Image (spheres, rainbow, N blue to C red):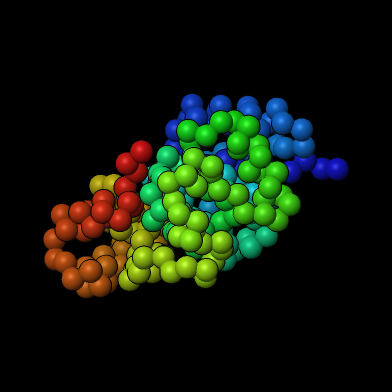
Length: 217
């Protein structure tokens, strides 16, 4: 039987290295690619299609939430497992609303990660026991559409642009990262401000921080 192929995405190199060793040492599992941010992950998926992506919620360039939404649209057969430090139920709702099949915490043990992978391979949804202790069962969605995530007026592309603005990227740099023109970046910036009813970049950055678009881990 061929190995279960996994791509790992996290902006912390030492953490990725440790997780990759753990997974590669497990029978029947193989890491076939690594990415340090959401944009790199999507580029990697253009030429490497795994069985699963394990990713962080908070990453530079593009959050795991938005990356997961893109993956579900383009590669619906790829399972998604979030690995995060965030224990707030807001992040769980956002994660499972993307169609992800699991959410575990970085404070969980390595054996917990292997159990999560095994459960998802069998078609189950897997949540961290530590997370479950803090969240009432009736607040935990079981999959996409089972609950309503917080309303977000921005499109997926606008979210990408907003995150890069919050990270201090110029319009030229944003255009190069997203393969769009500077004029298009300016249009997105204008639309974002109109939708959020703000006029200053400082207000955009404040909104991005409140919504978790910047990497605060």
